[in-house]
Length: 478
Ligand code: NAD
Image (cartoon, rainbow, N blue to C red; front, side, top):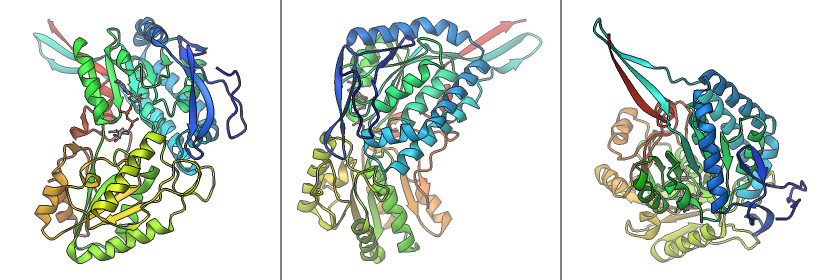
């Protein structure tokens, strides 16, 4: 590994693994690409299986003391981590833009949200509950820590998705081995570096792989729980691999979220919100709007508004202050979305975008597609990119059935002026979250999780915290 790789931003940094409180070089190194240029941004440490085992062993060794530490002290430690991250938010945000591609303002938002996520969990509690108290008996429910948690994250929101796992896991008394996606490891490594000074050795560990160690981590007999966010395809492998040891498992997987527009909306206003909900983070959001259903009478107007917004968007390097939309995060995803563009041209009418940008990096123009059949790939599959299909409906029941006709069940939106009617439609969608007249509002105190093949288990909220614990009933005869 080169000792002082140079970042585009002009800073130098030696990105190391965090194992047992020590920042160590990897067994080998990994090139990290800046998606705005397609060129190497820097290199970082990459672990091998032996280092993965060391990280799990360190987390296992740290568990008895950390889980026995009073929750008040764990809370204070988390708050120190949040403060330290907040104090370095500009540095983290810039690095996030450089490795992930999103506009700097959005990266700052993600880091701010990460600080808020840690603080929100630090404010929660896991009090024991007296379930029955009589002259003859006392029955108490406690929430015991599980042990070592493997936190596995994708490349679209590397920091906030990590915090949704690490903060509740640590508050509840678990220890953690984190493994970021190989194309966005840098912010997680920098976060590990920050934690090295703030948490006891072994409580939090970071390893980096090249998509080759995840299976070893999820199978590891000393890992008690896997908290996984990623694609449904990988989620299925994770689910199979934890079966051998009956590990606890949370799966936050893919989605193909529908937006249903009702016939009483203001088209211009709703088009702006739908456009944002579809194109934020270049469409690389599990809960992004990925399909839109519009009534006949509003269809042409809605398509024109969406196309105008796409045509006006400023796409570019996230470090450029004028940029509204950055590149796709990596070459594999870029090529995958190009496949969806081909599908769009073949099976629909492309009314904005439809092409890559003629420059270096993984840029795709925001694309709106109309008159596309329900069985086109772009409608059936998760595109995870800035290519939005807009479909027409004449019967609301039929639109709901089409929205539900997918193996996914993550989120969805309903847009309508009559709130009773919109609420009625919302309750007929088979997803874990439905927003009405707003989108992507995720709060640390509101539980979040998918239905069907979008996963199971809950993140955030009290329920999300309790997923990092084992219920223990103590039943006493007096
Ligand atoms: P991915 O499944 O390819 O990778 C996710 C993580 O799993 C990475 O860290 C990867 O290295 C690791 N991994 C790869 N193979 C593994 C294995 N066999 N065992 C264990 N871990 C393994 O997903 P991605 O392409 O990085 O992310 C995009 C996907 O994530 C999209 O489908 C998106 O919808 C989904 N996502 C879901 C949510 C949610 O909360 N539901 C949030 C963000 C992203």
